[in-house]
Amino acid sequence: MKHATLLLNMGGASSPEEVDVFLKNMFRDKRILSMPKPFRYMLSYLITNRRGGGSKKNLEKLGSRSPIVGNTKRLLKKLNRKERFEAVNRYTPPFSDEVLKKLQEDKIEKLVLFPLYPQYSTTTTLSSFEDIFEKIAEMNWSEVSISTVKPYYRDERFLNLIANRIREVKDTKSKNLIFSAHSLPVKVIEKGDPYLEQVEKQVEELSKRIPQFKSISLAFQSKLGPVKWLEPSLEEKLEEFKGESVVVYPISFTIDNVETDFELDIEYREVAEKLGIEYEVLKVQNDSEEFVKFILELSKEC
Image (tube, rainbow, N blue to C red):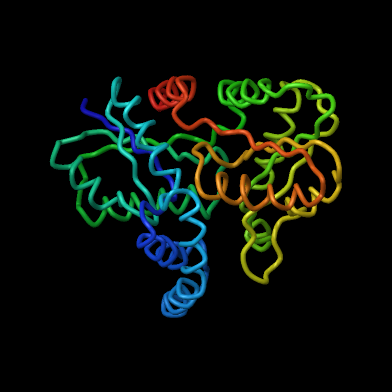
């Protein structure tokens, strides 16, 4: 049976011009803004106009391209030595319609959907799944079978990948480890989204597998807008460690992107330095050989 695995992610701008594409598509997503379509589209236009300029300036500090673009290409190159893998993004190319059309023409009989989000959320995993299923229905592609990879935040192999990365830190007993997760509006969690519970359980499991730190805690980043978001924010958490040493691991990401390389490693570094904190941000899995092996194993189990 001819099969292919789709790596699902939000995507990232490959140029300053694509920043507007990312923002527009993200805020048109019903899983991001749960309001009627006309209002959602109008608000996406306003947000893109308001935030686009600042986001483009931030991107320039990273070489005018999101790190997720190159990191994903390198990961795909390694995976495609063994099996067929394609990337599908929600908000920037490659989009699902173009990738699925190519796979249909190649007479693929089975698709494995592999979210690059370790934890399940309606705003990420479900949004990506819905996008794929809607496009396949529009294509009348009834010949293909589809399997989905379950959340792997507690998979022993994945936990060990992260633990191994954290074990690279020196003198851990004198340092404070903060797991930084992408925040969500509290109202999303109150509607039954399991993301927070899964992040907390993952932190609990990882804490059993890593060296002793002075402290281990969870904080949230990437808050946007006036609604109530998950707390504590990373900025609030850093305030607790003035004059100390802090190591940050981005627990909700598998591929480094603007939120890790700019927000965590540039913006929050400036906050930390003002507080007299010795500050380090760890890289996530990206195209490591261990992560490649994990993806191949997990995709074959579907």
